[in-house]
Image (cartoon, rainbow over all chains, first blue to last red; front, side, top):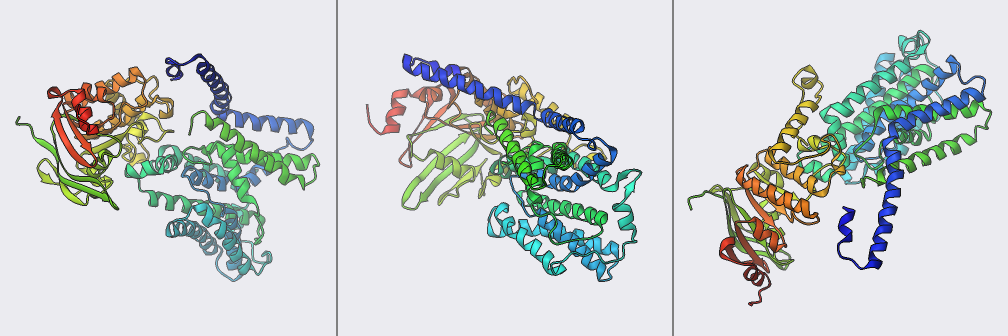
Length: 344
Length: 252
C-alpha cells in the first residue's frame, strides 16, 4: 500500500513519504519481533530468571523451594485466569483481591459459628460468585464501566470482611475436617492446590480457545458493536464472565484457607495488580480481544519466581513492591509495542 | 420486464429535528439487479440506506419486500428479511481469522459429545466452508488462518461480502465499496459485485460518489438531492453529464 503514495507527487513530498515508510518499517520490525515471539519469549524469560537465581543462590533450585513458588503462585494464578477472561472481554475488574479476602473470612466465621465445614465452604464459594454478579449487575444498571464499579466494590467487599471478622484474624476453630487435610494438604510431595491450579487452567484453556463461549468473549472484547450486530448476546456473556471471575477468586481464597487454616480481612491487599499483571505478562491484552490462558500461568510463575528470588537473595522485603511494579510496567510496555504494528 | 420487485420503498420520509433527510422517496429494486444511489453529501443517501437496513425507523412511508409489507424496526429485523449492509471493511473482528469472522455469532458446534455438552466449536468444518466460499466468490487469500488484520482493506471487504453471500442474503447494500482501494482491488470488488448479481442471484444497492465506477457497475441509477429523489435513469439511457447535473441541480 505504500506504493500508492508515490503517485505523481512533487520531489519534496516524496522525501517525507519515504521517511515515513522507513520509520514505519523500523517500528514494525520492533513490534513484530515482540509480537511473534511473545509466547516463546515469556517462557524463555521465566527460564532465564530461574537459571540466574539457581546459580546465584543456594536454595532456589531445591524441590521444596520450587514447590513453594508454585503453591504461592497458584492462588494468584487461579485469579489471573479470571482476569484473562475479563480483560479479553474488554472489561477490567479490580475487586478480586477483595473477594479473595471476604470469602476466606466468611467461611472461617461460619465454621467458628458451628456451621459444618462443607456447607461453610459452599456458602463462601457462592458468595464469591455473588460478588462477581454484583459487579456486572451494577455496571449494567448504571451503564458504567466495570472498572469504575469495581473501584467501589473492592472497598465494599473487603469492608464486609472487616465487619464479619470484626477486624481480626480468625484461626480458632476445629481443623480436623477432611477439607483442611485434603484440600490444604499434599498428594505425594505436591500440594493439592497445584493440582487444582493446573486442572482449572487446562479446563479454562479449552473453554477460552475452543468453546463458543470463549469465542464470544473475545469477539466482544475485539469489537463490541460488531459482536452485538452479529447477534452475540452481550449481557449474558458479560454476566457469566464476571461471575466466573468471582468464582475463581473464591476458589483461590478457599484453597488458601485450607492451606493456612486461618483467615484475615487484610490478606491479599494489592493482589489485584499482580493478578492483572500475570495476565498481561502472559499475553492478554489490556484493551481486550486476545489473550492467553497458559501465558497467564507463566506470568504468575514469573512474578512468583521474582519475589521468591528476591527473598533468597536477601534483598530487603521493602523492594518487593518496587520490583513487582517495574515488571508490571515492562509487561504493559511490551504488550503495547507488540500491538502497535497490527493497529489493534 | 417481468422481473420480481425484491424491495420497494414508498413515500419514505425521515426527519432529524428540523431537517428533512428523506422526503417522500419511492424506489424499487428488482431481482438480479445492481442499482446505485448517488447524490452529493447530505443528499440523504445514507439515511435512506439506514432506513432500509433498520438503523433508523422512517417517520413516514413503508417498505415492501417481495410485495409484502416489511416490519423493519432494527438491524436484526432487516437481517431476517435477507438485507445485509456492508460498510467497506467494517463488520469484522480484526483479531479473528476469516473463518471465525464468517461464522461470527453462528459458530458451528462439534457433532459429538464435546459439542453438545461442552459447546466446543468445529474449527475444521468452519475452515472448510470458508475455503469453499472464497472459491465461490473468487477471492484468493495467502493464509486463510491469518487474522483479518493482516489482509488488505479490499480483501477484508470481500470477506464481509462473502459472509453475506454465505448466509443467504438476497439484498446487499454496499456503502462506498471502492473507496480507499488500490487499482487492482477496485477491479476485484467491481467484479465481485457483478458476480453477486450474475452468479449468486442477489440484488445490490451501491452507494458511491465515484461516477465512473457507478457507470461501470450498475444497471440503474437513482439520484437524490436535498432529501428528494430527483431522478432515475437506466445506465444505458443516460450519461455522466446528465447524472452530475441531476446531482448538483445545475443544468448544463
